[in-house]
Image 1: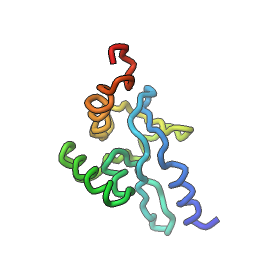
Image 2: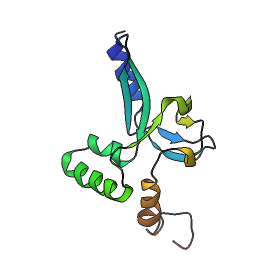
Image 3: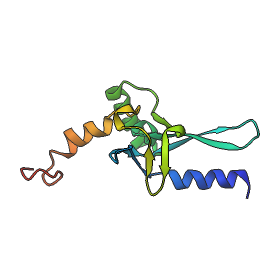
Length: 130
């Protein structure tokens, strides 16, 4: 198998997997994968990216530009959150980290959207009052 075949299979198998912290709590999902070329010419996955800053550039321009722009303004970041592969404890049906969510570089944008946009929608939460 050629190196590029392994690289593409790896990328496809990691994309859109849920990322869980060591306690099983949701961190995000894999929106992009960081790869680097090693001195021997082989490619190596070095990090997993999550959040709108990573997902946006993969979407069509008319969706991506406003989404990434809003994310940059609200999160005060230019680069997406990247989780180094050294923090991955297990690659199963989900990616499990060896650290807690609070110890990650994830910016909380998805939490803000969940709390302020999704939760107020009737039926969108576990709260019987909503």
